[in-house]
Every structure is written in C-alpha cells, then in structure tokens.
Length: 539
Image (cartoon, rainbow, N blue to C red; front, top):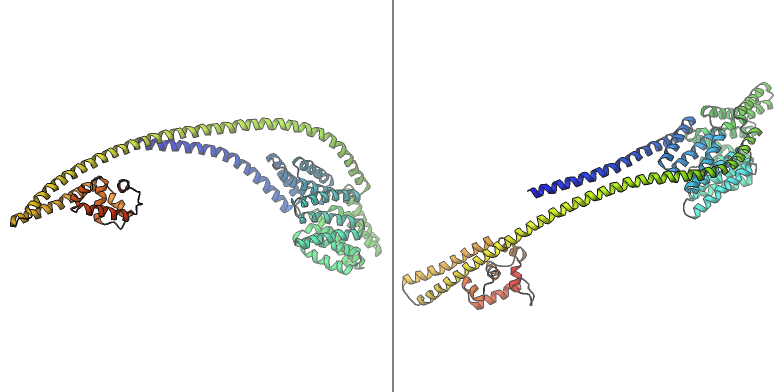
C-alpha cells in the first residue's frame, strides 16, 4: 500500500512541475496573443471606416502600426502604413503620404518584402502624377511592374496582383491625353479580369473616361451611370472623381442642368467625406467656366473665387509652389538617405547589442527552465524506476515463493498418488485372487474394491484441481474438443507419471495408455518432434 502511495506522490509532483512550465509558456503566449489581437482589431477597425471617417481611420492605422512594430511583425506594420498613405493621399495630405511610402520602402527592404516595395512605388507614382510629373510617376510604376512580374514568374504572387499597376499606368497615360496607350493598358486589365473574374468597378469607370476622350459619349454615359449605382453602395468617396467626369460628359453633350448637377454632387461628396480634395478646386473652376458660358458672371465669379480659396487651403495642391515643395522634398530625401544609411548602421549595431543582451537573458531563463525541467523529470524518473524495481523485485520474490509452494504441493500430490497406486496394486492383486471365488460375500468385497478405486481417483482429482487452478479451464478454452478422460490423462502427464502408473490410476491397460497418448497428441495438433510432456507442463 505504501508503495502505491509513493508512486501517486511521485506522479503528482511530476504533474505539478509540468503544469508550472506550461503555465509560464502559456502566460508568454497569451500576453503576445492579446497584444497582437488588439493591434489587428485596430487595423480592421481602421479599414472599416477609412472611406467615411478618415481621421479616425488614420489614428487606428498609426496605433496598430506602432503595436505591430513593437511585436516584431514588420509586414503587418507595412500594410498599415500603405493603407494610411492611401488615406492621406485621398484627403490631400500629400506630405504625410509621401513620408509614409518612403517609410514603407525602408521597412520593406529591411525584411526583404518585394511586394511591399512594389506597392510603395505604386503609391509614389500616384503622388507624382497628382503634381503632373508624369514621367517620374511612370518610372515608379515601371519599377513596381518589374518587381511584380518577377514575383509572378517565381510563383510568389498571382496575376491579379499586377492588375492595380496596369490600372495606374492607364490613368497616367489618360492624364497625359495619350488615349491609345491608356486603352492598351486598360485592355490588359480586362484580360486579367477575364482570366481571374473579380468585381473591379474602377476599371469600368476608367473605361468610361476613355470612351469620353474617344468622343463615344453615349457609350461613356451608359457605362458611367451603371458604375455609379455600385459606387453609391460600395465606395461613395470615389464619386467625387466619377461625378466630376460625368459633369464633363454632360458639358460636352450641352446638357447644362445635368452638367451643373453632377459638378455640385461631386463637391457635396468631397465635403461630406473630406476625400479627394485635390478635385475640389478643379470642380469649382469648371462650374465658374460653365456659368461664364451662359453669361452669369456673378455666379461664375463666386465659383472661381471658391476655386482659388480651395486651392490656397490645400497649399496649392497642384500649383507651382506645391510642385516646388515636392521637388525640394525629393532633394532632401536624397540627402536624408545618406544620413539615414549611417544612422541605420548605427541603429543596427545598437539593435544587435540589445538583441544579443535580450537573447542572452532569454536564453539563460529558457536554459534554466529546461534544466529545472530535466532535473525534475530525471529525478522523478529515477524515483519511479527505483519504485518499479522494488515492486518488480517483490513480485519476483512472490512468484518464486508461489512456484516453490506449487512444486511442493505437486510433489505431495505425486507422493499421494503413488501411495494410491501401491494401494491399488495391492487391491488388484487381492481382487485377482478372489475373482475365481463364487462366494457372495467375496463378490461384494470385489465391488467395494472397484468403488474404492473410483473414490480414490475423485479424491486425487479434487486435490489436483486445488493445486493447479485453471489447468482444466485453460485446456478447455484452447482445445474444446478434449474429453474428461483426456483431461485426466493431461493431469497425470503434468505430474510426470509413467505409463504403468497411469494405467493403474485410470483403470486401463498400458497399451490403452499409449493409444490414449497418441490420440491426445492428434487432438493437441502436436508436430512429430514436439514433446507431449513438455507441452502439457507449459499449460
């Protein structure tokens, strides 16, 4: 009982040690997981409101970016930066957008994320395009295109991932009034969309603009009206651009009312969402020109004044001053890159030292935990093995003792059986001498001798069964076709009786014993060379 209690204590100690180690690791994992989930939820929240509540979206993007950097997930931090830069472009905060894309380039190069580098070039191309620097925009788009084509070739991305760059190049050529080139790139977008079906409203909207420039006004009108419904439910902020183009379309069709209506709609959406502010001065100017064309100078003056004020409030989003600003920023960026390279190397050295120190401390903690775990494990294993050895030793001693007792009882049983045999021999001798007599009393005496022999066998059988428990049962289970007589023979063979001794106990001739042994071998399905006595001894 004490041994079992000791084993339970050892088992409980081992379980507690494992639970403590699991708790420490679980705590670290849960802590990281909670911080990661919070950062991811902030990113998803920002995505959900980036078209309706841009300032809040930018706040959540910034927060999740910083959290991801702290957690060491640079790739997700880059995704936050890319999306926040798009939002800054939409709300005409070009300086922040420009800085965001350059930070994406820096972080992407540090982790070798080529797709993120391509996305940053797409964003920078869009910024240059807004300032009419179309050649520089095209240069950035081509860099992105080259990277994406290589990634497709290597099987790292799929063909639809390149669609956005072709779309941006089409816009670039359309803004330069190179319509045939723009149409070529847009056709490529349609080919990709045909091979990989997807809902790309922007491509359809761009096709409507190209139809306008190709003087296919009715086709342009039908297509733009069709996509308008989809943008109303999916991305209302884009309607600033769409409505501006639809106003241009109806101006060409000399439909003054619809032209004015769509320009005003464009301004309403821009005001509602504070998006695509770079279009606002242009739309005001279009309205001013429209009212000048119908001799309403007062209204025209009001709109042109609004155009000037809007342009001024955006720091001249497309003015010469703002173009100069981005040129200066480019020059500054080149100088800054040299300084940043030096700072980056210094930072890397510091980070290496810090990382080494952190990894050293962490390694010491982990090694200590592992050592404690191993020591505890091997100690418990040693205790368990010791207890197991003691238990096995006790069991072996018990088995040997039982074996000795069994052998002793079988010897007693054999001795008793031999005495019975001697008695039976004597009785058989008396019986043979008396069998010729005809006296009634003598015949009764012979019958009693026969009955006594049967009683002797029953007594022997009972004692055999008590010593060799399960012997007959094991025989019956393995060889169900054996008879009771076969069982008797097996019991005598187990006790190693001779054929003569068996014949006396069973009341049959020696020849019958031999025959019975032969038949028993057949029933037991023994091979010719297999010893019957050894086989029975193993049962």
